[in-house]
Length: 561
Image (cartoon, rainbow, N blue to C red):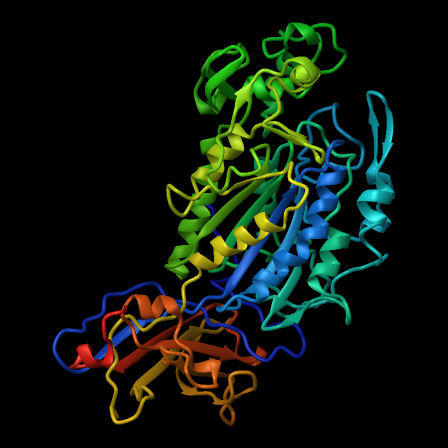
């Protein structure tokens, strides 16, 4: 199993100068007893950290799609920052170029390396030698969007490197403080970091790039070391107009991909081609039923060098289940620290523009007429097309994404052919926010003064943690002072808590409003734990709440309406 705890179970970050407060680290779930009278003691999970990885196709056909993503990114950030439970977020970018023998561009491969440099410094990455001539997309895909040459992130420390200040290859906002230069917003940064050019490998490997990016974040000699926080939510967003081609090049390269190989996955139209086309990726990893013409369905397939079904250890492309298991292992590790942690996946790919809303199904059909050449190059007709482009139906990515859907009804695939990605980006954030749980006290807490409209609970909050020297600590946490927008820490304290109990939202202070999820579950109390930078615990911590339990829940916690 992949271990995310190489230097301790740290989650959260308060390294940037001027950060007022950070959110707490959670505890493994334990049983608690609320029978009879007395108090209810339970760990409370208070997590707002989310790490977002964009895996962006940087092949020759992606200039317009990258520009659309960058232009629409403001809505993505706005949705994040307008959330009722405001997350501390990190956003990183890598490409789909994981290398593919001699048939790839000369500006990579990135192999999962996190990218955070201004596209204005990378003009050569926007030039691609197409069959019809050289395409130069620098003006439209970079210069028209980004106006900040030399942009980098501000040097910060992290919990895995608390003593080292350096520029990190990701965009970050923690408690309202970013790691960007003064006057630069996360949207500004993404408009320059996001465009990855069109000179990358045309045999896109988004699944392998994702795996390598997450693995590299665990290596202490990598620039992206520490990007993945062990207890944080993880969101992976793929942006591509191709099918996944994560290949075992070392086992089958010569036979499958070279013109003098066996041509098992080459069509007759390409028999004399000097190099393989993307159709090899389709035929080596997908099996369709029905057809030809229009197919009933297409599913991922583990096929060997001879074109026949084989076990996943000997398939030409790495099996989709290999990547599902990898990410599920990460999710399982996260849940040891944060029981509510989720790994979410979204795809901007070759699906109909109303697919996510249930308005259309993916069609798998051979390309005919004007799409005949598309068929020759890709092995299948386009799954979507518009004035903004066309894209291969994502069979392997669809299967992967569906494994991380929050419900069977959740369609986490969106059309890369749309000319506006903002609705898709907003839906991705809405899905994440739906998974983000507030820190409800999961018992009905007693109101010690029922003569007032305000809940008057009696709770004791204790934090336990180990420092970097391995010394255990247990300290009481005191309530914060001040207001919701300007919290004040008790004298000498680096950690404090606030309570939310207003189920109506009638008063003028939104800082005490109870989250709708707490109300819906019949709970009457919610916690927030705030930290100064000095209050961060590099090895992680746990918060235990002990509150007097109500003897009259019908009064203190009426059933939600």
